[in-house]
Image 1 (cartoon, rainbow, N blue to C red):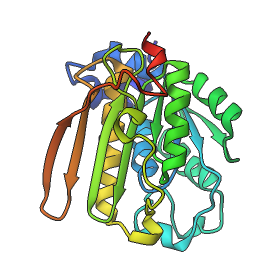
Image 2: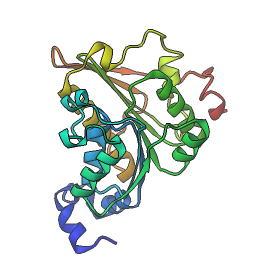
Image 3: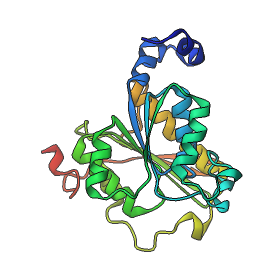
Length: 251
């Protein structure tokens, strides 16, 4: 049940008809893994903690750098040099001491990533490199866990949801294949802060919908964001029956 304090804390969210007390209880009982506590992971973690997701697992092996502070809003100047996970835990605990925070400070290899994904209900990919996204996707397909994927660079953002529980859902590999070796990172190409905030906020919204059980998730759809012209475009994405990652999972 929800305590009187929780009913007050989440009252504005509970007032939303699609959430109500039942949805808030589902959030309280939910566990989510956030891979990367940087530009995307900052708003994701802040909003999921504030919304009352009962258990947040934070995975990031990096430390806070001065160059992060332009966009990674969960950290501050006092956090420079600290573990990003520890910095995030300090901030999230101050926002909502009612939730449980589980740290993953070391880089996740295949086995530890599989265990981390298996331990939660949903995964949010907030990483900044293609290899990690592919590994997270494979672990989610293997475990049958929904994946909320976001990306942002320069003035362009992307968002989609991959849900292996649904036979018609593509996976990340269906959409991007093996990618390109020339993939750029924010440190190489740059990125505008509010753009990662926008994409991360949308990731948090998709996660809340999936965990609380309301609305329509972006499964089979890819949202493309053009921040330069403030334009949004949506593409349909189909599952590849011959996908080397998820093809066998649906047989």
